[in-house]
Image (cartoon, rainbow, N blue to C red; front, side, top):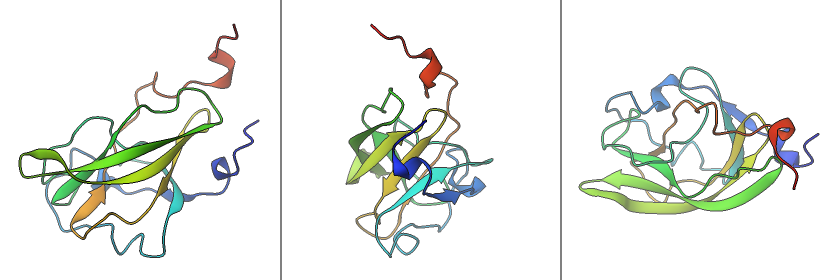
Length: 141
């Protein structure tokens, strides 16, 4: 059983327009997260995690898409600090902010603050089967 409270107390975001395969748009996260950082879990057709490689500009229904630049937590019930980069112009990390990611066994939750400026948005993609390790498959040495 997970002991991290954020694995049970989060906001669900099910938004197909956040997917990296969506084109340009005017969806931005500054107002969505205006009340401050919150733990979120991405679900549904938009994808289940923030992509871990750069995303082209004008994707995810926004101008400057956000992607996670760092190592995802591979052990269930662990949290890591990392950076979300936002692609703009020819720079895949023109803007950035710090986030936290928790591995909840079969999914991730993210502690997401408002992006640093307007025009930025957290993007999503579908997780690969190997990206989240279940507790039963972790080898004990």
